[in-house]
Image (tube, rainbow, N blue to C red; front, side, top):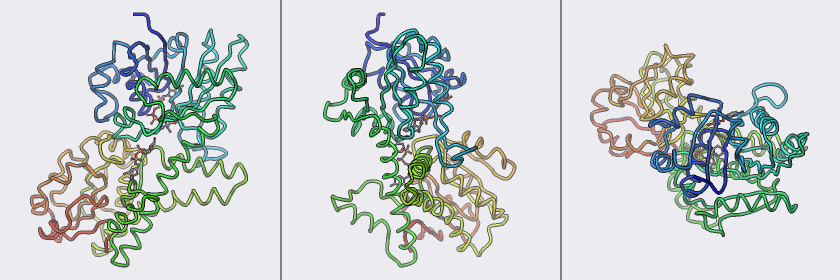
Length: 453
Ligand code: NAD
Ligand code: UDX
């Protein structure tokens, strides 16, 4: 079949895979190829067991795969034939050298840019889909357009706002799509080419265009604002616990102020995920770089409060459980960083388990989707941690349960059965405020949650 356009995505991860599957589904006359240097990941995308768990993803992939959606490890072939190349490689926090622990590690992005430059035989639009420091497009422009073949590359920024667990819903019905392009004639044409893709299903008034720098910075700002709300409500949760106020009541009432809004006000054991911490640290690093240390420390405090919130959970258990957790079996319910994903990157459960180990407790982890990831993350302490697919088995003989992920399954457990199998007194810390605490107290549990005294 002759396709109208050929789109390549470099990076078949949590963003590249679902985003391109949605574009393929909505644009059947476009050929969409997703490439990755990780052969196991590509093999999984081509198999019935996709490499990531995301509600609704299987159906979208099944409709398009083999028709106009292809997954491959042949990056060069993909580059050669593409008109538009989305770059969706990982941009983790740098762990070495200048900016270590804060700046973005751009080595994968730069390698990709150099490969595009080396392999291309004609002009292409290169789209930044990864989350990047503001002004990265300048570096991409510099590298790509230093080619000696006379080929002109246009850089467009199109950051992704999907959240894991709701990626398909977010892609299908986005609040907005952001496209940043240079204000030159060729920049506008390139920006329009990317607008045309989304216009297949996104209403025109939700496709926003800006200059490239605004687009790059908007992505970091959006994540910083979202994370800031979680840290704000979590900071108040601690004060609620000391004063007898109830954080859910506080959140509900402030959320009724239309200027504040009611979303992202759920107190928790802290935010996790691959984006918030990394992107805020990157933002803070940029502020420092541009001579704005006060702005840097303002945003850094959002991450500091989050780390404090994560760490104070085991402290609360310790206090309630007679100041010793040594040798006690503790069931950890949930290891994913949020429900409906198997992703455990920066999961608060990780901090909880490490803190439990520091107290010489014996954690037993259960999670409906993230058991393999949990074992991978805890590879260095495997002999000290147990894993069970069955929450009843995990809680059997435990002194306490700590709920780390808000999986719907945990709400509907037979909590009487859980209680009966535990050591007494049976302690429970609901780190997500998802359980019916009065029902649990009636069963006999000694219960704590977040933000209620
Ligand atoms: P990921 O680690 O799941 O996927 C990135 C993929 O890129 C990996 O499979 C890796 O093998 C591949 N890759 C790296 N270098 C490559 C190269 N030179 N050639 C081909 N493939 C290469 O990461 P992700 O979660 O999909 O995130 C990708 C980007 O999107 C990041 O910048 C992230 O900040 C941003 N983002 C992520 C989310 C999210 O929810 N995960 C949301 C919005 C934006
Ligand atoms: C986030 C952004 O929401 C998304 O727009 C961006 O593209 C990527 O980063 P993600 O990290 O996948 O998405 O999930 P999100 O729903 O934002 O949750 C992040 C963390 O915050 C999770 O650990 C979640 O449990 C926690 N959270 C969220 C709270 O603790 N309370 C809330 O009210 C909301």
